[in-house]
Amino acid sequence: MSSKVRAFLKWAGGKYSLVDEINQRLPAGDTLVEPFVGAGSVFINSDFKHYRLNDINQDLINLYQLLADQGDRFIAKAKPLFSEDNNKAEAYYHHREQFNLTEDPELRACLFLYLNRHGYNGLCRYNRKGGFNVPFGRYKRPYFPDKEMAFFAEKAKRATFTCLPFSEVMRSAKPGEVIYCDPPYWPLSPTASFTSYHGSGFNRSEQELLAQVSYEVAAKNGVPVLISNHEVEDTRRLYGQASLDRVQVKRTISRNGAGRVKVNELLALYRPKSLAGCKD
Image 1 (tube, rainbow, N blue to C red):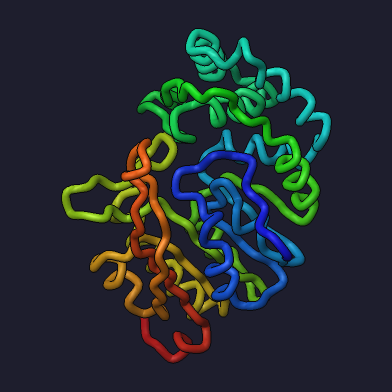
Image 2 (cartoon, helix red, strand yellow):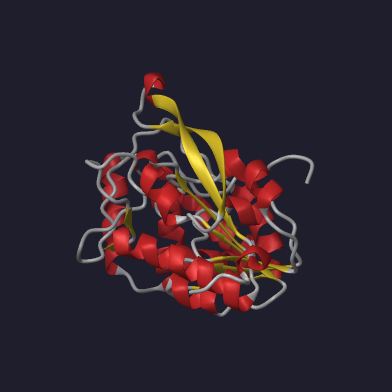
């Protein structure tokens, strides 16, 4: 791929800036499996014959499936929401309430895209009752990503989409498949909280389960697993049976320029051959 393509969604922790580093470390295979697809930057910027794309966020997978099925028709349906009149706080909160009340898949998908591009900092956050609660972002002119959506829809012809627990997706992997995991980040400090993921939290026990399942899938199924996460002492310990690489990535921690800092990211690769002789 000659140049990188951006995802059509804003996404906290998106991997656009790291796709080259990730692609260099992904083993060869026919199918890429992503249990935490998020905005899909690795899917968009890699070249596998097939893809299995999963996320626990039903709204995200619903949007992807409709875009894959309808293509230009869906893009045309979503575009009117990106008008000057809809880029106002009153309109945003009206659409947010409409999103939280409707069960219509097409309307939810259009509104999910609208909220993503108009909400604060591209966040995707729900309250305990499952209501989307990200505040208005106050952008001058939110971008309608029609070209990026068309690219996604075309490439999605190679993909299947699911909304399942990550462990179920990983344990179903077979030789010839490669797994890339981009879980919610481990906190950078002991005082920071675990990153919330959809309506439920992704806590320490789930981080530990991910490491356990990655080892299991590589050793027993013969499927390599690459994981990205913050580099901290806990993640180095957690991924101790994998090959570890450190890369640097810029993180935006506030809205001003001074908030952009470089942090270390850990890329942990579980290779089937190196784990084959290990005991559980």
